[in-house]
Structures are given as C-alpha cells and as structure tokens.
Image 1 (cartoon, rainbow over the protein chains, first blue to last red):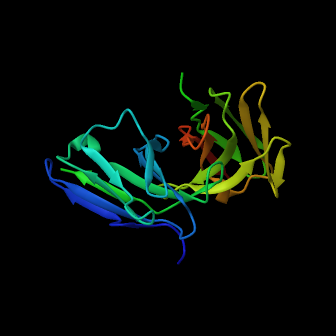
Image 2: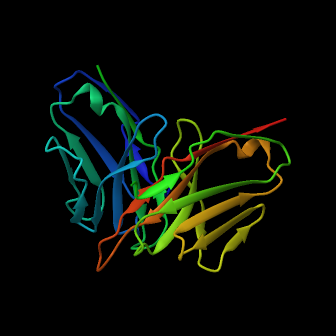
Length: 113
Length: 113
C-alpha cells in the first residue's frame, strides 16, 4: 500500500497523559499536513511541513501540541497533558507540493477519558 | 467570517435527481480549489480539483467563479452511493511557499429511493 498511513488507528488515554501519533506520507510527497476533526465539523488545520520545515502552525493550537518531521519523511504529532477536549480524529495528509491535491491517511481516533 | 463557508445541509434528494452545492471563500489570493468526499467515520477522499474553466468528471461538474469567490459542485443522476459529506477545500496561500488547505464544514447529502 503506497498511500498515507497513520499509527495508531485508535488511542484511548487518561486525561493528563502524553500521546504521540505517527504519519508516513506518500513517498514522493514533500508536503505533510496535520488536521483535527470532530463530529459534524470539517477538518481543522493544525500544522504543515514542507520537507522537514514546519511552515505554519495554527494559532488555535496550544503549546501542548508539537509536531516534527525530522528527516522530511514521516512525521509525529505529540499532545502533552491531554484534556477531554482533545478527543477527536487526527488526520494526516500529504501532497506533492504547493497547490496540489492532498491525500489523507485513515486517521487516528483519540479518546481522552 | 469563516475562510470557507458551506451550507451544512442535509440535502435529501431522490435517486436520479440533480443536486448542487455551493461554497464561498474569503481569501481572494487563494490559488487552488478542490472538492473532497467524506463517508461517515472515514477519511476525506479527493473527488475532483476545480479549474478556472470548469471541469467535469462523469456525473460531477465543478465550477469556479473567482470574481464572486465561490465554487460549485453539481451532481447529476444521483445514486444512493453518492450519500456522503462533500467538503469544499481552498488552498489559501498568499505568497512564497506559504499555503495550507482550508476546509469548509461540509455539506451532507442523503440520496433516497
């Protein structure tokens, strides 16, 4: 399968714990995006990378969220001190470049209890 | 004002009907536009890109009006399998490398017998 893959698919964690998600983009894609989606809403932008550079981070994102893409390939999204409001689907997408269509992974569904 | 606005619906139409969705965007510097389809609890999947001249793919037609800053999607001869949420997506980059994909909240379509 040469699509975008995300791991884990589901994560249940206790409030206050840290969680880390991984995304492996399509291999020739240099752009990688993270989104969060809650029920009934469209995907909400979190951050994106071009190769290893993080070009933009949403102002809505608290300091508890951090993302990396150290070698310009896979990316990780970490949430520290999780809160119940962090419960959502976390989607990763990749694209070949600016102004091109993006392809999504199946997402990581986070439940904070 | 939201960057990308859509009527959330739901649009309930009988099989065989023609249905149209509109989407407006606020950033006049936006450069690329897409329609994605999302099934319940699944990731968004690219339906089609939207070109300035308009484009058609089978029963689906997308159009862009830059002057009025809106995008449309027309579905002819609706099938039960078209039931899904349709997401309008705008690449809202301004200059240089900065660009991100901004999603609308989605329009839900339910096709019935």
